[in-house]
Image 1 (cartoon, rainbow, N blue to C red):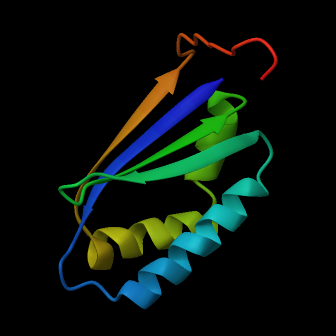
Image 2 (cartoon, one colour; image 1 turned 180 degrees about the vertical axis):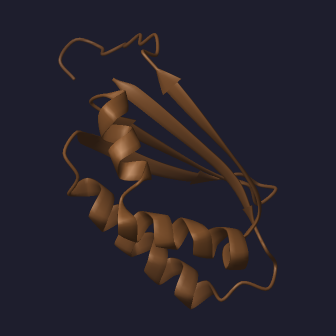
Length: 103
């Protein structure tokens, strides 16, 4: 498994409709990529957003990172949407699970 954690803050003046359309398209496109497992997003009280995506392998995550349509939206994110961001790449994360019996 390979994880990416994308922490970001949006610019206060972004075009929300354009951002939401791009975000929805990227989630749809990512889900269609070989090796995609999941993506979840969270918003903190202070407005920071965190998206966590899971991939079968580093190669799958890197292929997604360089997908041509994704690359165009990444560039738009830097120019139009994000005040700042940090991307963490996590190869071979240690995973622990808890599942109560019967659930």
